[in-house]
Length: 255
Image (cartoon, rainbow, N blue to C red; front, side):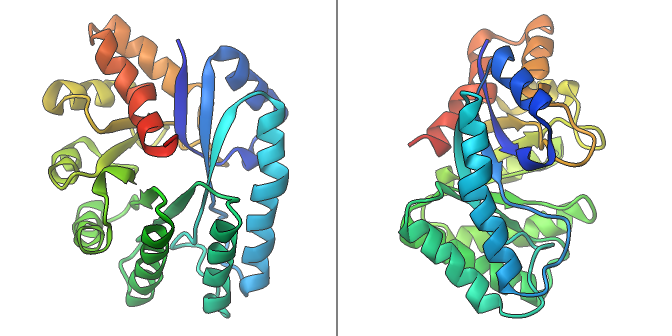
Protein backbone atom coordinates (compact mmCIF):
# COMPACT_ATOMS: atom_id res chain seq x y z
CA UNK A 1 0.00 0.00 0.00
CA UNK A 2 1.29 3.45 -0.88
CA UNK A 3 0.38 6.78 0.66
CA UNK A 4 1.10 10.50 0.67
CA UNK A 5 1.75 12.24 3.98
CA UNK A 6 0.40 15.71 3.31
CA UNK A 7 1.68 17.49 6.42
CA UNK A 8 5.22 16.91 7.66
CA UNK A 9 8.13 18.79 9.19
CA UNK A 10 10.79 16.23 8.32
CA UNK A 11 13.65 18.57 9.23
CA UNK A 12 12.99 17.71 12.88
CA UNK A 13 13.54 13.99 12.21
CA UNK A 14 16.58 11.80 11.69
CA UNK A 15 17.60 9.70 8.73
CA UNK A 16 16.14 6.54 10.29
CA UNK A 17 12.61 7.96 10.07
CA UNK A 18 13.03 9.02 6.45
CA UNK A 19 14.42 5.63 5.49
CA UNK A 20 11.54 3.91 7.28
CA UNK A 21 8.98 6.03 5.45
CA UNK A 22 10.63 5.40 2.11
CA UNK A 23 10.80 1.61 2.37
CA UNK A 24 7.34 1.27 3.95
CA UNK A 25 5.34 2.85 1.14
CA UNK A 26 5.26 6.59 1.81
CA UNK A 27 5.45 7.64 -1.82
CA UNK A 28 5.36 11.37 -1.23
CA UNK A 29 5.36 14.01 1.48
CA UNK A 30 4.36 17.64 1.72
CA UNK A 31 7.04 19.54 3.62
CA UNK A 32 5.46 22.40 5.58
CA UNK A 33 7.36 25.39 6.93
CA UNK A 34 7.07 25.94 10.66
CA UNK A 35 9.61 26.56 13.40
CA UNK A 36 8.54 26.84 17.07
CA UNK A 37 10.16 30.20 17.81
CA UNK A 38 9.26 33.77 16.93
CA UNK A 39 11.99 35.16 14.66
CA UNK A 40 13.43 38.57 15.45
CA UNK A 41 13.53 39.73 11.85
CA UNK A 42 13.23 38.81 8.21
CA UNK A 43 16.75 37.38 7.93
CA UNK A 44 15.79 34.41 10.12
CA UNK A 45 12.77 33.74 7.91
CA UNK A 46 14.98 34.02 4.80
CA UNK A 47 17.47 31.52 6.17
CA UNK A 48 14.80 29.05 7.19
CA UNK A 49 13.07 29.12 3.81
CA UNK A 50 16.44 28.79 2.06
CA UNK A 51 17.27 25.74 4.19
CA UNK A 52 13.96 24.09 3.29
CA UNK A 53 14.21 24.84 -0.42
CA UNK A 54 17.82 23.67 -0.73
CA UNK A 55 19.03 21.38 2.05
CA UNK A 56 15.89 19.62 3.27
CA UNK A 57 14.43 19.22 -0.19
CA UNK A 58 17.68 17.56 -1.32
CA UNK A 59 17.63 15.29 1.73
CA UNK A 60 14.11 14.09 0.94
CA UNK A 61 15.04 13.47 -2.68
CA UNK A 62 17.99 11.36 -1.57
CA UNK A 63 15.56 8.90 0.03
CA UNK A 64 13.58 8.54 -3.17
CA UNK A 65 10.44 10.18 -1.84
CA UNK A 66 8.53 12.55 -4.05
CA UNK A 67 7.80 15.77 -2.20
CA UNK A 68 6.13 19.13 -2.41
CA UNK A 69 7.47 22.14 -0.51
CA UNK A 70 4.99 24.47 1.18
CA UNK A 71 6.34 27.88 2.21
CA UNK A 72 4.56 30.35 4.44
CA UNK A 73 4.60 32.32 7.67
CA UNK A 74 2.89 30.32 10.43
CA UNK A 75 0.95 32.44 12.96
CA UNK A 76 3.52 31.41 15.61
CA UNK A 77 6.38 32.37 13.27
CA UNK A 78 5.52 36.01 12.55
CA UNK A 79 8.74 38.04 12.83
CA UNK A 80 8.87 40.87 15.36
CA UNK A 81 10.37 43.21 12.75
CA UNK A 82 10.58 43.46 8.95
CA UNK A 83 7.39 41.54 8.27
CA UNK A 84 7.00 43.02 4.78
CA UNK A 85 10.50 41.84 3.86
CA UNK A 86 9.65 38.35 5.07
CA UNK A 87 6.52 38.28 2.91
CA UNK A 88 8.58 39.48 -0.05
CA UNK A 89 10.71 36.37 0.42
CA UNK A 90 7.64 34.24 -0.26
CA UNK A 91 7.10 36.15 -3.48
CA UNK A 92 10.72 35.55 -4.50
CA UNK A 93 10.46 31.81 -3.79
CA UNK A 94 7.33 31.47 -5.90
CA UNK A 95 8.86 33.65 -8.62
CA UNK A 96 11.69 31.14 -8.87
CA UNK A 97 9.43 28.06 -8.69
CA UNK A 98 11.18 26.81 -5.54
CA UNK A 99 7.95 25.95 -3.70
CA UNK A 100 4.73 24.24 -4.69
CA UNK A 101 2.26 25.44 -2.06
CA UNK A 102 1.58 28.05 0.61
CA UNK A 103 1.74 26.64 4.12
CA UNK A 104 1.31 26.25 6.74
CA UNK A 105 -0.49 29.51 7.36
CA UNK A 106 -3.52 30.24 9.48
CA UNK A 107 -4.64 31.55 12.86
CA UNK A 108 -3.53 30.77 16.40
CA UNK A 109 -5.41 33.38 18.46
CA UNK A 110 -7.24 35.22 15.68
CA UNK A 111 -5.52 38.54 16.41
CA UNK A 112 -5.63 41.40 13.92
CA UNK A 113 -1.94 40.87 13.14
CA UNK A 114 -2.48 37.18 12.39
CA UNK A 115 -5.44 37.98 10.15
CA UNK A 116 -3.45 40.62 8.26
CA UNK A 117 -0.51 38.24 7.69
CA UNK A 118 -2.84 35.45 6.61
CA UNK A 119 -4.76 37.58 4.12
CA UNK A 120 -1.56 38.90 2.52
CA UNK A 121 -0.30 35.37 2.04
CA UNK A 122 -3.59 34.03 0.67
CA UNK A 123 -3.51 36.74 -1.96
CA UNK A 124 -0.01 35.60 -2.93
CA UNK A 125 -1.33 32.03 -3.29
CA UNK A 126 -4.06 33.32 -5.59
CA UNK A 127 -1.57 35.30 -7.64
CA UNK A 128 0.74 32.32 -8.13
CA UNK A 129 -2.02 29.71 -8.33
CA UNK A 130 -0.72 27.68 -5.38
CA UNK A 131 -2.56 25.29 -3.04
CA UNK A 132 -2.91 26.33 0.60
CA UNK A 133 -2.43 24.45 3.88
CA UNK A 134 -4.38 26.27 6.57
CA UNK A 135 -3.44 25.66 10.21
CA UNK A 136 -5.99 25.48 13.03
CA UNK A 137 -4.93 25.65 16.71
CA UNK A 138 -5.41 23.23 19.56
CA UNK A 139 -7.04 25.82 21.83
CA UNK A 140 -10.36 27.51 21.11
CA UNK A 141 -10.48 25.56 17.84
CA UNK A 142 -14.16 25.91 17.00
CA UNK A 143 -14.18 29.70 17.35
CA UNK A 144 -10.94 30.12 15.42
CA UNK A 145 -12.11 27.78 12.65
CA UNK A 146 -15.26 29.87 12.27
CA UNK A 147 -13.15 32.99 11.82
CA UNK A 148 -10.73 31.19 9.50
CA UNK A 149 -13.54 29.89 7.31
CA UNK A 150 -14.85 33.39 6.77
CA UNK A 151 -11.42 34.61 5.67
CA UNK A 152 -10.81 31.64 3.38
CA UNK A 153 -14.27 31.99 1.86
CA UNK A 154 -13.58 35.64 1.03
CA UNK A 155 -9.99 35.26 -0.16
CA UNK A 156 -9.57 31.86 -1.84
CA UNK A 157 -10.49 31.59 -5.49
CA UNK A 158 -10.33 27.78 -5.60
CA UNK A 159 -11.54 26.20 -2.34
CA UNK A 160 -10.85 22.66 -3.62
CA UNK A 161 -7.13 23.51 -3.47
CA UNK A 162 -7.23 24.49 0.21
CA UNK A 163 -6.64 22.00 3.04
CA UNK A 164 -7.92 23.13 6.44
CA UNK A 165 -5.76 21.04 8.72
CA UNK A 166 -5.72 19.57 12.24
CA UNK A 167 -9.51 19.37 12.35
CA UNK A 168 -11.64 17.47 14.84
CA UNK A 169 -14.45 15.27 13.44
CA UNK A 170 -17.31 17.65 14.35
CA UNK A 171 -15.70 20.44 12.31
CA UNK A 172 -15.36 18.40 9.13
CA UNK A 173 -18.86 19.06 7.69
CA UNK A 174 -18.50 22.81 8.19
CA UNK A 175 -15.27 22.80 6.18
CA UNK A 176 -16.55 20.44 3.48
CA UNK A 177 -19.76 22.43 2.98
CA UNK A 178 -17.65 25.36 1.79
CA UNK A 179 -15.69 23.18 -0.62
CA UNK A 180 -12.43 23.02 1.34
CA UNK A 181 -10.53 19.81 2.03
CA UNK A 182 -10.51 18.54 5.62
CA UNK A 183 -7.09 17.61 7.01
CA UNK A 184 -7.05 14.98 9.76
CA UNK A 185 -3.81 14.69 11.74
CA UNK A 186 -3.27 11.28 13.33
CA UNK A 187 -0.93 12.06 16.17
CA UNK A 188 -0.85 11.75 19.95
CA UNK A 189 -2.90 14.58 21.39
CA UNK A 190 -4.84 15.06 18.15
CA UNK A 191 -6.67 12.21 16.40
CA UNK A 192 -6.52 8.43 16.37
CA UNK A 193 -7.33 6.10 13.44
CA UNK A 194 -10.77 5.46 14.95
CA UNK A 195 -11.56 9.17 14.51
CA UNK A 196 -10.77 8.89 10.81
CA UNK A 197 -13.11 5.91 10.58
CA UNK A 198 -15.84 7.96 12.25
CA UNK A 199 -15.37 10.78 9.75
CA UNK A 200 -15.53 8.46 6.73
CA UNK A 201 -18.63 6.70 8.02
CA UNK A 202 -20.36 9.99 8.86
CA UNK A 203 -19.33 12.27 6.00
CA UNK A 204 -17.73 10.12 3.30
CA UNK A 205 -14.18 10.12 1.96
CA UNK A 206 -14.30 12.91 -0.61
CA UNK A 207 -12.09 15.83 0.39
CA UNK A 208 -10.71 14.04 3.47
CA UNK A 209 -6.90 13.97 3.77
CA UNK A 210 -5.05 12.06 6.49
CA UNK A 211 -1.60 13.19 7.61
CA UNK A 212 0.88 12.59 10.42
CA UNK A 213 1.88 16.16 11.31
CA UNK A 214 5.35 14.64 11.64
CA UNK A 215 7.62 17.02 13.54
CA UNK A 216 9.42 17.67 16.80
CA UNK A 217 6.46 16.60 18.94
CA UNK A 218 5.70 12.92 19.53
CA UNK A 219 4.52 11.70 16.14
CA UNK A 220 4.66 8.57 14.02
CA UNK A 221 6.36 8.60 10.59
CA UNK A 222 4.06 5.74 9.55
CA UNK A 223 0.84 7.23 10.95
CA UNK A 224 -0.88 7.42 7.55
CA UNK A 225 -0.06 3.81 6.67
CA UNK A 226 -1.07 2.55 10.12
CA UNK A 227 -4.36 4.41 9.74
CA UNK A 228 -4.91 2.71 6.38
CA UNK A 229 -4.35 -0.71 7.95
CA UNK A 230 -6.76 0.10 10.78
CA UNK A 231 -9.42 1.26 8.32
CA UNK A 232 -9.02 -1.89 6.27
CA UNK A 233 -9.39 -4.12 9.32
CA UNK A 234 -12.42 -2.10 10.40
CA UNK A 235 -14.27 -2.79 7.16
CA UNK A 236 -13.81 0.54 5.38
CA UNK A 237 -13.78 0.00 1.61
CA UNK A 238 -10.59 0.10 -0.40
CA UNK A 239 -11.68 3.06 -2.53
CA UNK A 240 -12.39 5.15 0.55
CA UNK A 241 -9.02 4.26 2.07
CA UNK A 242 -7.21 5.10 -1.17
CA UNK A 243 -8.89 8.49 -1.31
CA UNK A 244 -8.07 9.60 2.24
CA UNK A 245 -4.44 8.39 2.32
CA UNK A 246 -3.39 9.07 -1.27
CA UNK A 247 -5.65 10.28 -4.07
CA UNK A 248 -7.20 13.32 -2.40
CA UNK A 249 -3.77 14.68 -1.43
CA UNK A 250 -2.35 13.98 -4.87
CA UNK A 251 -5.15 15.89 -6.55
CA UNK A 252 -4.43 18.96 -4.41
CA UNK A 253 -0.63 19.07 -4.40
CA UNK A 254 0.51 17.12 -7.48
CA UNK A 255 -1.38 19.15 -10.05
